[in-house]
Length: 241
Image (tube, rainbow, N blue to C red):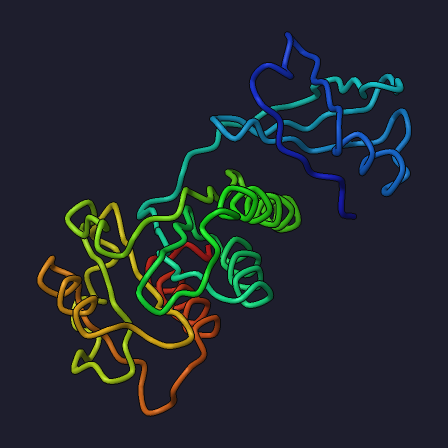
């Protein structure tokens, strides 16, 4: 049986009680039709998962009684996707599916061939985080995937990662270094926009230490490439266990 699953912040936990309000309250009561006595699972997105029971339903919140809790810890290596911003549906698809697979962070990237109204960035990031939060709940992740503020491609610090990959259809890389993914703590990779990378952008990334890699003879759409390579990393690092 599948039980409701939610994330809460530390301020919602008091002793052996947890409060749920806002959109989660509406989803729990009006969508899932949960009632007193039902089981709900909770993550505090920090260090614990809880098995709880609904003991009181109010207009403003639901009170949950903690029945059990267990320690959780982030999986190593941590994986960050730098996704050059795509058109609405494609970007949202990448965020949703990458979150489900298990990426730890997604950093939207503004590159030369990205088309976006920068005045609307803040609203987009908020929407992307909500999409990721829903996917985190649906896939019952221990920790949420975090959507960060967009970065310019030339401000990416490749050196922050033990391994950083640039999948590129015209590249010469053959996957060298994939055997090392289990031995590191931080992996990053970047996926280009629909129009691809500009030559200067590729040179900047490679000069900064990024490893160029090809997937084979087939040319993938950006959203396909993002999900495909994450799946490869997920398998090789053993995070699917």
